[in-house]
Amino acid sequence: MMRFLRPGIELSYLLCIVSLCLRGCLAKVCDLCDCSISDLETEVPGVQNINTVCNDGSIQWISPYGALRIELSYSTGGLFEACFKIQTENVKIKVSQESWKNSKSPFASALPQSSLLKPLFNVNGRTNEYCVYSNTPVLLYLEPERTHDMSGFPRMNLQYVLERKTPQHLKNELEDCRPCDTKELIRSYCTSDFVFIGEMGQARHRDEDDKTEVEFHVTRVVRKLGALHFAPNSDIQQQYGKIVVPKKCQVRNGRGNFLITGKVRFGELAKTCSPYLSDWENISNIALREGRMECPLVL
Image (cartoon, rainbow, N blue to C red; front, top):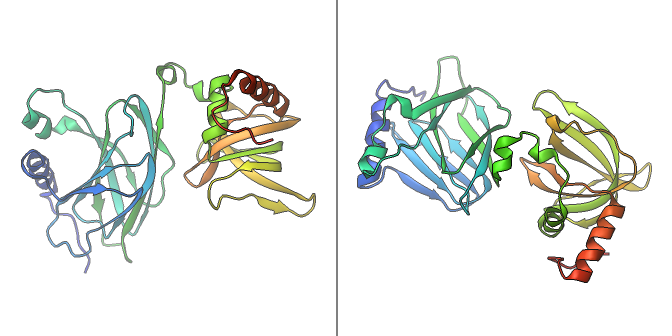
């Protein structure tokens, strides 16, 4: 049966937020990094609340009805960047950001005003990556709209990534583009999802999402996370992989062997550090002698 949002949805938002102070309103804790929420059996629109516990994950909303309130909170606090992407099927989603209201009264922060919800965008299909800096939890408020021309089973999937940032990121938009310093490089070598040695191939700018896709011919995989793998290149008896960097960094082809470290981000390999291999060998040897290596060095 096709369902439509009722004009009283804003009233349900008001009642839900007030009830958060009293007893909670369909409150749920996303105790896994990937969660699934269903409104399949819901007859009366309400607001479901999700508090995430991971720094990256996804939330699937099956048969969206009513509204979904998501709190994205970085695990260790402090300044962080919250990025998310949304994909919908057979439903349109209105995405707003809820503001925190400064007040000593717990009820004052729960009572909504028209200025508390800031509309961000509407989703009907797939969005690009959307990011926001914050030092408090980021609150997203999602409302579905099902129209007469939509058919099929409605669902929504939201992927999110939360990353720790420094005040320099607020001052300089190219902060993520600078080379890693020695401490950052050692930490990245020891904690990244993948570490490999290789030569840079072609770089292709993707206008659709402001990313640059760089191909690397991989001569050696030092470490990889789980099932992460690089595809074989039968022509040159090597492996190859594609990593992504922000387009604003203006990556150009470089010659030589590089050490590449990075993480899996929204299903792609995202670069963290990329020094020349010879520079890394000098840095790691000195760090070993001085006792500053944070993990065993794989030779």
